[in-house]
Image: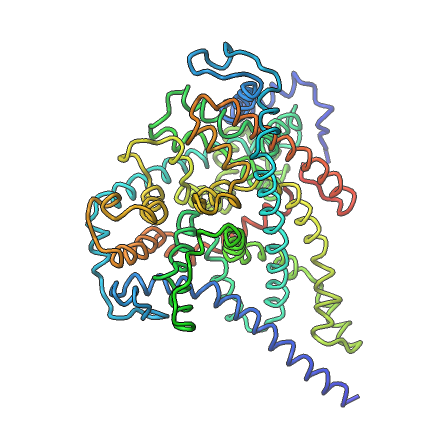
Length: 296
Length: 312
């Protein structure tokens, strides 16, 4: 008996070692490129080009950041992105909530049909070209509206929201409120909204990150540089410019090595806001992700 | 207790009682109608020869001409092939790693270690597609990136440009997706694992099961329903390959592997052909969407039978 326990313990030790190893290796694989990029952005560009940077910054320098931050298009991009994110998220959350609340009411006449009306759009869509024609015909092409209006409600998010309300606000509460003379609208503003703070936070974060990171809408609908969000500027500097030189993007001639290091800075500058907020809000993200998976 | 049966409420009474709710719904319904259903109506141009001057309704009908043009086009096989290969490869490569990560993470005892690693692996989920592709190009730059420098250190020579290679494109596309997504995908498994009844573990321990055996016989069976459901769902949306990342990674040298249906639609309709090809590219997109819808319905039926979960 004792012997078998020993063998078992030994087996278990190997197994635990294996688990820690797998988790550690996967985590390091994720972490390393991130650390490398941050380090490269703070290094002297010659050192980056020569391959001297492996983990920590070599010959610490802020020169690249100075070039990027004095560039007007970064700030225009930032300003536009913040505007689209704030306005877009506000519209998104508002529409999602006023849709989710009635949908959570099980005895609403025609509920099933209305839900199908919404969920069908998750399965089938008109696609890129008809949407483009629509936006064009609405006169939103090359305007800020095209950035906030066409994506105003994500049906999946609405379903998540509805599930939350169904689970957290029992019918009895509404019955009780009605006896006290409360109507549906009052109930929504005075009971449902305050009790749904958690899901509102999740929705705001999801939509917010979506707006912050999206590029395709701007790419498709905007022509005017002054309207471009940050991601389009990033796209030009990081990806398109593989073929162009810096002057085409930055109106400024820098050497290839400096330009390459600038790219690291741009990545950091664009992602920093999300990464600073992320550790504090990841709890909400995860809760939301699970809520959505309980019943899709 | 009074229970209200939804079907028992007559429409008149319901309208009187819930008119505010219908008022609430007015805006979302109008919105979804305009931005989702009107474009679906716009699909008629797939059966027409769309001209901007004439508009959607006045343009001439051509029947299935646009579809035929696509099926007969030399691009058809390439585009469909690339889409399927990329999607299947992504599914096969991307599916096991989150499961493995969740199972091993669940066996780790140190709570702090658990929390820190989880925070780190979830991080890439929030990186934008543009930054993701940009990072990929920086890190794997053949002279100035980690890859170029590593090969240089090891062999003394700089490697060739990996982004110019069609075969490398697939690996880069898929594995960067795995890098970005495995942590996030594992959340659902991790959550399912915390729901394992501890008494099962105790019973197994009493019977002399090792930790590894407990993972195989206690933990794994708990998440099998989740695995099956997610796998089925993923298969249903296999053709909805996102164009955002592919488009960013695409260049003239790797186009033979990177032209998928959605990017082809973009190229035909927006970037290359212009309005003259609106009908053609709409037809291609519609063909893809219809197949995807059929797949979804089939998969949903299977899912209903196997795991008693359905998406719609």
